[in-house]
Amino acid sequence: MKPTLLILAAGMGSRYGGLKQLDHLGTSGETIMDYSVFDALRAGFGKVVFIIRKSFEKEFREMFVSKLEGKIDVELAFQEIDKIPAGFTVPADRVKPWGTGHAILMAKDLINEPFAVINADDFYGAGAFEVMAKFLTNGISETEYAMCGYQLNKTLSDFGSVARGICSVDADGFLTDIKERTSIERKNGKIIFTENDKEVELDENVPVSMNFWGFAPNLFNHLEEKFTEFLKTGTANPKSEFYIPFVVDDLMKEGKVKTKVLPANATWFGVTYKEDRPATVAKIADLVEKGLYPKKLW
Image (cartoon, rainbow, N blue to C red; front, side, top):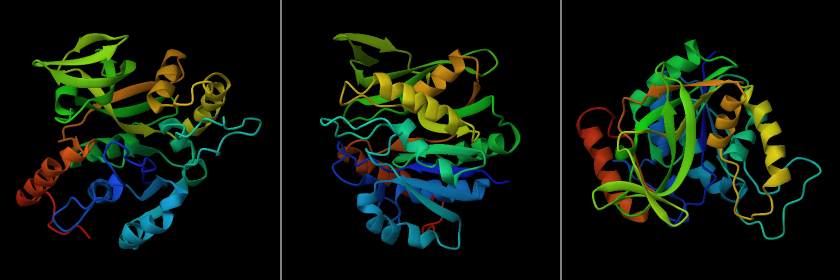
């Protein structure tokens, strides 16, 4: 059975200033998601599921889904703030979505096979899809998941701070710990993040999670359990989010899963901020010029 690619595209891109998922960055007007689907298809994935917001379904179908018809199976799932378990209510002051863990949970009824999860606005590189497809086909189990690891210094923006999952890895290549760090930036030649008003330096080469995960479908059962726990304790803060790295970290500490860190062996870049756009356009054009992608994908 071919693995599925799950793309998290429900975020509205507030820092970027618009629906960056649908921004035309490729040499023939492609989005970053086009390149992700193209890479996944040639790596052996058989289906793609997009998590989006219902409010832009029509635009998404017209601009994106229609061109994939006949090339790969496509499904849509919707992340909405009121899609929570029975017995819970959305706090009146809650305006943010519930986070990446909740977004993945929205695809539970659409995925019954091993699957990868990626962000819509990150360019992960063909090599990352190849290594993940191989793992999902040959190495995945209900007790062994995976993530693609990227070097921190290759994942920063020149135009503002970023959030990254900072990873610790054992001698066998398994993840031992992951800490979500926010406000990471390069400052005075060092990479730092701020915690409790103090600046803490990070190793430039430390592996980080860019939300490229490989899961068995039993993850959905874990997510349901963990999201219920989160709602019992995390609703007081209207901005609290149910992040997938937190779930994976909990499952590892409980001894339920191990997570293999797969060297990405690929070029990563993204568009966190509007100012990142020109460099991203130039990088894609360079990959096309080198013959790694056709000038027109579809």
